[in-house]
Length: 110
Image (cartoon, rainbow, N blue to C red):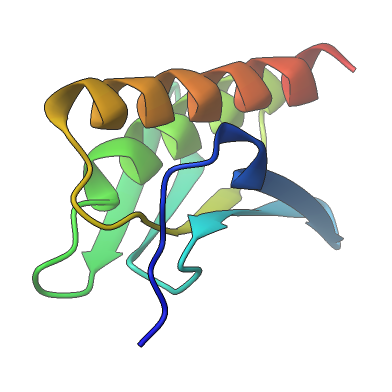
């Protein structure tokens, strides 16, 4: 069995253009699919739909990121996330969220 220790440099964000839409794949540690969130322009609002795999927590991050990126770019954005580290502390989870948000901000400013 493989152990997944927290290494911040593991966390990756890949952006794939899908026509005029955008797919963001965010993974780290034991990569997998834990949640997928799609945000889209809905009149004057941005709406979001999320699907989460049971016992996974990525949806708590993927939904906010999809909303943020869709609003910033004015297009449909799907965020697929799967990050797993064994025995991650609350502080470690906070650090993962910070790293993910930093990578999203870097993507939006490039």
